[in-house]
Length: 136
Image (cartoon, rainbow, N blue to C red; front, side):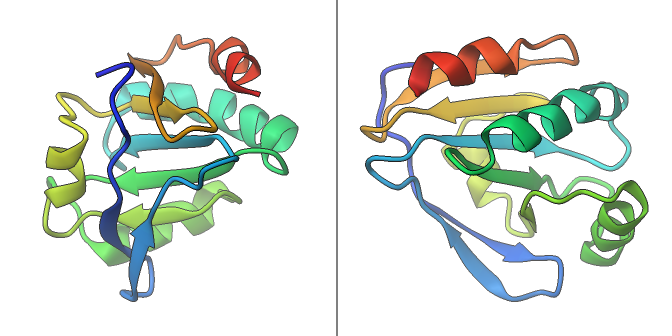
């Protein structure tokens, strides 16, 4: 929930290496929970790319693929085909999804400089620019 401390989660990168996604105090973070098959995620992708282009040097980004009907190889193929430049991970265990209480794909969490959840949203029509501007 907004105002709560953001948890650290352990996921895998697209090569299968274990990675800890941990909010850094002093630097905001944006996490998107998505899927290769999610239509809302596909429509949100240009917004994510624009946000990364504008804020990537000031905000940590992590796109975490949920483990429903996909595999690490499918995620890696998607990342390559879509030329995604921000870090993309795979939640094989589902624990990251549980830790953030993700109810649907295209779920975005923005964490402020103090490590608190400042924004949550779902769907393809999120104003990430405004939400990121507020945490900077």
